[in-house]
Every structure is written in C-alpha cells, then in structure tokens.
Amino acid sequence: MDKDELASELRDMLLQLAHINDCFLLHKKILLYTKTMNREMNISPAFFQIIMYSLEHTYMMDISKLYDKDGQVKGIRKAINLCEHYSTLFPKERTNVFLDGEIERSEVIRIDVLKDIKSARNKLTALEPILKSLRGRRNKYYAHRDKKYVNPKLFTEQYLN
Image 1: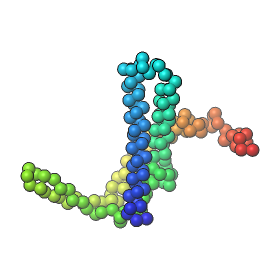
Image 2: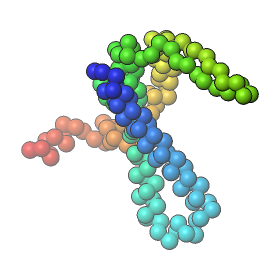
Image 3: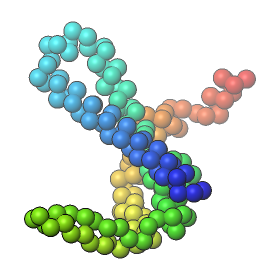
Image 4: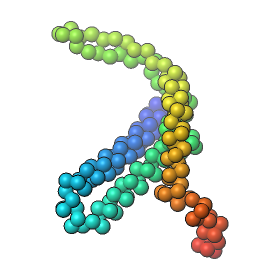
C-alpha cells in the first residue's frame, strides 16, 4: 500500500464517521422539533416515526461497526492497525506557520506516530465497558441476535431449505 492508498482508506473511514455524525445530529434535531413543531409533525406521524427509527437504527449499527473488535472491519481498530503497519509513510514532523502581529513565524512540531497509535489503543481500552454495552444493545435491539427470541438454527432450517 502506498501513501495515496492509505490516505484514501483513511478518508473513507472518516467519511463513514461523518455520516454517523450527520444521522445522529438529524435525529437529535427532529427530537427537538417534536416540542416546537408538534402540530406540524402530527400531520404525518407515521412518516416521522419511520424517519426517527431509521436514523436511530442507522447510527447505532454504524457506531457498532465503527468500534467492532474485528480489526479487519472498516472501523477504528482497522484504521489504527493500518496506521501502525504503514507508520513509515507518515511524516516525522510538520511546520505550523502563523502570524505574530505582522511577522510571519513558523515552528516545527515533531510527530511520533507510534506514540499516537499507543494512545489511541489505550483510549479504546478505556471505552471498552461502554462499547460492551453498545454491542449488547445492538445485538438485542438492532441486529436481532438475542438468542431468547431468534434461533439461528431454526432460521436456516425454515428459510434456506
């Protein structure tokens, strides 16, 4: 993988993150509108219920994928693994240019990619209790994997034969 391919891969992951954020913000905005525009929204309540369900379902499932433990799924762990594997492609320093009054100044900032990767992994580890709860919610309510209600063996017998 070269620098452009890595950049493209990471850009795709960031676009996925932006999509999740957009869905969440729209869901939040519609919830706020239910108070201020209740009469207008009650003209077509089924439409707004479908929209609300779809937005919530989308961002919950996508967040679950984003934080999936499998390092091969396009998510944060894969991004971290890619960055670690191709750490030599990252610059070792960058120059910040800024104006100090009328004088243009610059400073060189050292970049330690492996240190940043270790920090990102530590942050993921700290989030693990929250992510475990998120996976449980996904499996039970969104992905319909609750063994109490769905038996995968019966499903394959009934629908694939």
